[in-house]
Amino acid sequence: MAPRLKLRDISFFERPVQFARPFRFGAITINATPQLFVRVEIEVEGRGVAVGASAELLVPKWFDKRPELSPAQTVDGLRRSLEVARGLYLARTGFLTAFDLHASCIGAQIATCAKKNIPALAAAYGPAEIDKAILDALLRAAETNFFDGMAGNIAGIDARLSPDLKETDIAQFLAGRRPLPRVAIRHTVGLDDTVKGEGGVADARENAGANYFKLKLSGDFAADAARLTRIGKELDTLGRDCKVTLDANEQYADLSALHALTDRLDHDAALRPIASRLLYVEQPMPRDMTRQSPLGSLAAHGFIIDEADDSYDAFPAARALGYCGISSKSCKGLYKSIVNATRAAKWSAGGARFFVTGEDLTCQAGLAVQQDLALGAFIGVTHAERNGHHYVDGFGDTLTAEAQAFAAAHPDLYADAGQGIRLSIHDGDLLTGSLTTTGFATSVHPDWSALAPLEQPKSLQEQLA
Image 1 (spheres, rainbow, N blue to C red):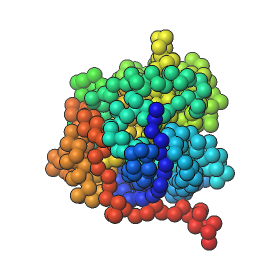
Image 2 (cartoon, rainbow, N blue to C red):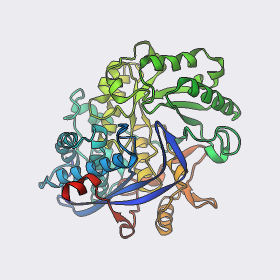
Image 3 (cartoon, rainbow, N blue to C red):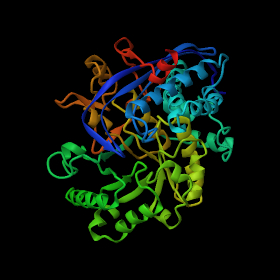
């Protein structure tokens, strides 16, 4: 029986994050954005009071890419999502399991946010971040770690939000998990990143010995083909068996544009270094176009959804359209990731190929990267986009004492090689051993006194004026 809890408080904080270099994906270039921190206090039935935490970047123009909105307005949408979720969660005053709390709020969260003109993907951000902090507190109260706690279904996850599954499907999946001791990094190459020479794709100081590379696409197939050709030549110089994934971030307008790209990949000899290494293509078309466009013959190339993953039924719907995978991101919801991993395992049991991937640069060093890394290691994600710290230069503007505390508590994950504390990458992999600490993959919480309260969304200020 999963323990029951009652929420006592939810607090939001943020910290400015300056990027060490521009990161361009889709239609935006990011140079700075705030990082969110969530602090919750819960009372666990029979176990007393515990505090939990989570963190994530407030990323502009990813959750909501509508062209009429400025980057700042899309960040405000995430802040509004958090405030709506806080009200819904605190309104549940009785003792519930962690998943009861999530399941009882997610429908109202999506509906309330829709009335405020916040799309479903952004609406899910609020519950996703609160759920992580609640789970951290619950695991601390139970004096257990994330891997053991989730294998025992400490959150009480069931199939009420995924009627295509049986209760036993989820229970068996959780009970059978053995966390990966290592997760390979997938080195991201942004659209403005250097390709050749110093700081380029083949520079070991840049790629940290990665064996997997994630290459951003612009949606202009001619420009993308030319750039991929240059990257392919650089990968050939590495002298090791590298794999690549492609990410369009919704930039290919429709199926005809997608056919143009795949035709070049299939028939252009200059692209063979990419095509021969290609594992899958991520979210090629806009999320709305995705839902109305069966892939047909394109499905053979291996496509996954990411931004189109905005509901519990997104993966079954995508499967029907010809997609074979879906991304796991704790900023979209850790429970949904576990449900989707259960689906992938069940659907693949007969020999088909369905999988969950790790795609997330919102995970900065500290709480965010550790919790998402643990989630991926638990559900079996063998390689993950994991160099968000690289664009932010390690811990960025985090207080030195706080960064040092994380490094001391998790010495297999962080090291200072003379450039400040950064993720420590071992032969292209991150180690997960220290994530078995009590709580959700962290022995350390941020210095709450050094954080500013979450900025009030501009639209709410206008309503209150």
